[in-house]
Image 1 (cartoon, rainbow, N blue to C red):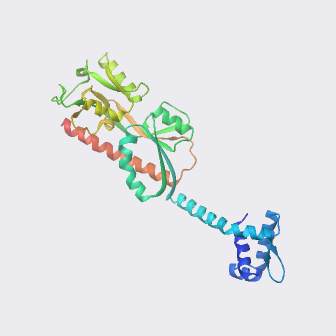
Image 2: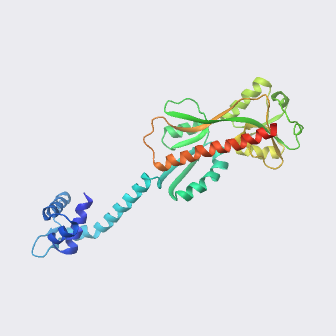
Image 3: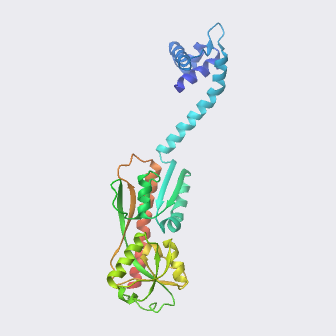
Length: 307
């Protein structure tokens, strides 16, 4: 059903004449007649009684009562689509691993929400492999995480390589050392993330290769929580700088001079994505800029301490 046919019907009822409706709408009279004919054929009812005075049938009255609501809904829909097209509205579904979701997202969101108040945002967290699965199932639009296992449906765009560092209690016996090597961590109690976490797997690999033995004290599901367990003097944590910077009172961040491994952090997307809404693209750009700037701040801090 065409919107212009509904408007033609409303104008005829309002002005009481096909001719006056044609003049008001700047249509020819045959066009107005055709609109009403097509509308009645589509609805399979007669809407108007053509006589000296135009009158509505019972079906016409029912249709007229609802026509205004239909047009307002259509106008609302057009406005919503226009906002969506220009990035002013829509739904952005973001996935992320920790500490991105808990610590950094609240820092990034306020400015975006202020600029685009009509955009709805949904945030989900998980490991990189879980996020990859969520993308494949179209539960999120993109994710920020470390590189997951290979998946033909998913593509990973690396943005930066995040170096690793050591977080220790301020009272730790290595706290006064400017340079710390991996071997000096032998017999230390390590705070670890859960078994399926890529960071946990990487840390265990480093320790197995360079120390031989791993002494675990506590497993923590959320990597952002590691610093609080270090603060409580329950162990030390080896993790990407992004996860443990800045330190909290009672803890110290230390570089490991002979540890050059790190994590690729970037944007995870579906490989064959349909064109995404402008709001999604804009927010993805914001995320990329934020990650890179945040990385520079943390990395500069570490270089300063090593100087």
